[in-house]
Length: 188
Image (cartoon, rainbow, N blue to C red):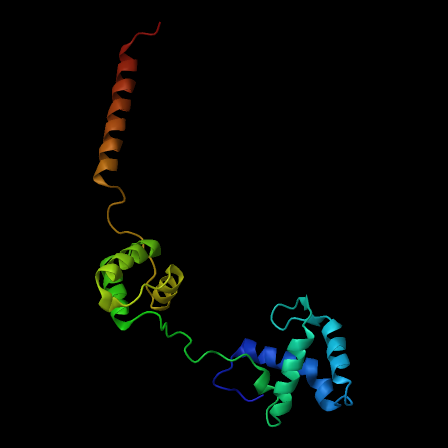
């Protein structure tokens, strides 16, 4: 099968698999009125999934759709059975250009924030500034950020806040006092 710009490896396997299911129908077309019976016979069979290798069954309506799609395309009946990649794949149309700029600026300022914290702060900014457009879902923002290489980084520098440091010093001080005083007591 010739490589199509809209088809990738897994999609080629799907195309070849679908063609193997309907191939006998195309090679020896059933008599008038027998197509429905042949489709149900094929639907009753178990097939190996082209990606996972598990046993699966397909409905007669799916097989019929594959059959007519291949029948209408005599030049490339296999290619027409491939799964097509959407034209807008990877473009994130629900995120406006202004919001993208805001996401990039926010990430550059705070690369250690979680995705949820970014989304919460973006929601506030979108409410305050209508020019940013509508607020997309958490999943959309996370998918966009990962695609843009905005992955959460670990914090550099101090691992503890000032409050934690004071608590550590205090507990060590108390432990030292208890330990020191226990040495002074004669336990005979």
